[in-house]
Length: 102
Length: 160
Image (cartoon, rainbow over all chains, first blue to last red):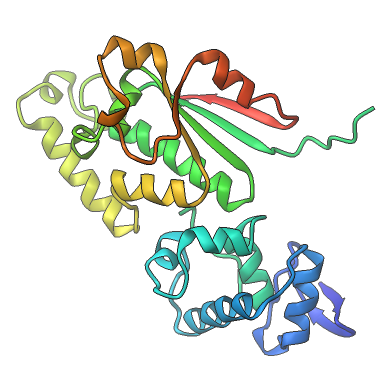
């Protein structure tokens, strides 16, 4: 389905995840963050950029892997995105919601 | 009228067994709740306490006797070494799907904000002290204390 985000028409799934990463830019990420009650700081962006890089390299994302990433530990990850770190951060990053239960 | 829409806000999980499959079920459910932004707490009671006992948590086993899903005759499951074999095989499979071991899983849960409680009565029964237990344990509490943790709209309780 199409949704207007930051003034642009974007293709998203029913949960609001972008279907095409090429449509993503920082203003889109910012708007999705606001919708999910996250105030983006440079630290948030650092994590989002890291997730985008992992996704590009086809690395499956999980809480355990992020804990071992040396980019962020699990505690801080939850502090940045308390409503569900992996779920919210990937939505902001414009990448698919991880299918992992871990 | 309240505006509660049926959303799960908190999961209270009671773990009463220490077989590997039950412990992992409880841990995955608690961790999965946190990943969805749902609060999660585990109350360890009876044999469930072994999952947070420092000397025992690395040595939990899969149940081979009385477990129909093992698809082997119960008598075979009781042979010496059978439990150890099944446990080794299961641990190998779990490593493949990136499942952490018990100690690391406890660390992940604590970092994720899962509260871990030990049942006072069971602690007394097994003569365990708080120092014997995993350092991330929040507190040793009574059943009444645990129920108080559930006095939030949208709390669900699960017995494993």
